[in-house]
Length: 351
Image 1 (cartoon, rainbow, N blue to C red):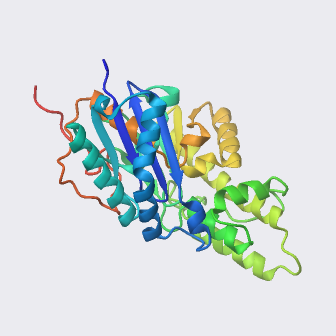
Image 2 (image 1 turned 90 degrees about the horizontal axis):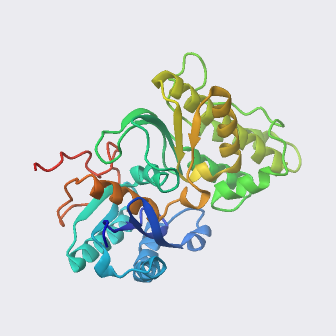
């Protein structure tokens, strides 16, 4: 192929994702989920997820190659999520990435899962601006970031979650009101029949003396629990779901729009699994339009974990001539986001 072709592998949680990207274009991808196997436990079991990744990896790679109409011999680099995530799940993906890179004789990039979420938007909307504000909102992370060139620049944390991330709160609240796992889609569905203003749930850390870019959803979850406990009779699930969802969406939108104003940014990038929530997307669009901001959100199917996002990030690294990782690179389940690579930015090779 005339341009690099990157194979991306994602196994940080319960999705086995594989993608193939060349020159900023997604050629093909495949995704297998073990979500149904975890549903009876009310959450993801790491060992179950790892076993599912083992079983799905080779079939997903074959399917992605077929959809892209390429062969493994055409691949010029492999990118794989090496953290953060569930340790057993990460180990499966990283081992597979190393094996495919070794078999194909191509370089390996051990990348940061959250940087992949940011990179996937490039596939739909083109290159990111020189600097923008990014809101990453997922099951385990809620962060406001200052983002530039994903391949070369350091990612600056403006604020992070101090306890429950937004997606985690969705799961816990769903359990409180008898909705199934995963909680995000279940609450989104239930909320369609509810009144978002029925219950005045708090907007956490939005007061004038609160840290402006920090998130905390544990107290909101507790407020829902106390309301349910104190309610007499049948719990109005749609109203609770809609009111809780509105509180999350309002909190995210307030802080994200304010961060853009503070940073002088005119583009907000919103990514991660919770970015697929219909109310979060709608309210963020409304608030950004009112503030004169451009909102960039990936297509819904690319908001949740997938292989395309890792391939997209690897594609950026390859085209920037960033030095690849050695094959003995290790996974880091608790890796902090500082750049595209798991271990942060790396100097370009000397010509």
